[in-house]
Length: 292
Image 1 (tube, rainbow, N blue to C red):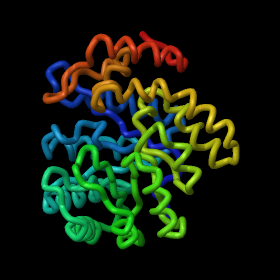
Image 2 (cartoon, rainbow, N blue to C red):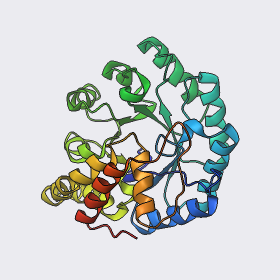
Image 3 (cartoon, rainbow, N blue to C red):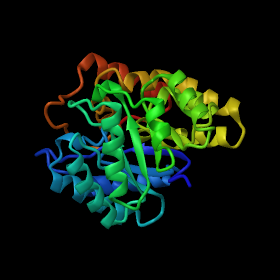
Image 4 (cartoon, one colour):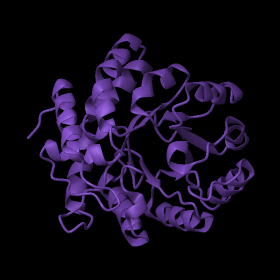
């Protein structure tokens, strides 16, 4: 059974000006996402700057989100690490808080072999009872989770595919007879992945356009492929602007342009270049997003 179908937001982690996690603001963003039709919240993923949160902050953010959402929609916690032991610890703690699923990025920097990936993900999945989503994003981790590896694991996992390789997505679906729950990890490939049997998207775009992101997926699932495609194509300039610098630099800038006051980034991430912010602001206005 899928953890969710539709559009999940890979939610940002708002910060105060002194770079502490701003829980009051996080609560506001969660409420806006739920009101906007978002189908699930993914907390402490890449977009949530999980790599620069302390373990205490990481777990506090997960606990806060579970309590704030209060079973209205699923909550998925990013608990992946390049250390299997650390990933197990974070996953078990998140499970205690009542998350509906876990998002496990492939180990970064140490670049495990496919055999190592199988052992890593199996150890984490076996340590908890909640469902897990494997997160394949070679551009950040340096290693691709091969379709055959996903097939080996697929009775116990779902997948967030952010490789950008549609042929790989097709192969995963073919090898699993279309039975795996697979989510797009790229906002510019939502409709193509849905057309191959995908279940939805874990989205950065949803931070600034939750209703339209939800509708893009829901229209497809309801059979309105033309309506879904129209949103996808219209959103492309904004999606491009949201990724013209490394995520989550642009999406945090976008939320601040909307007057959300989500605060700064933590180093080594720095503020968006002025010329790119101008491009982002134009794309947002063209997509119908009101700026402050």
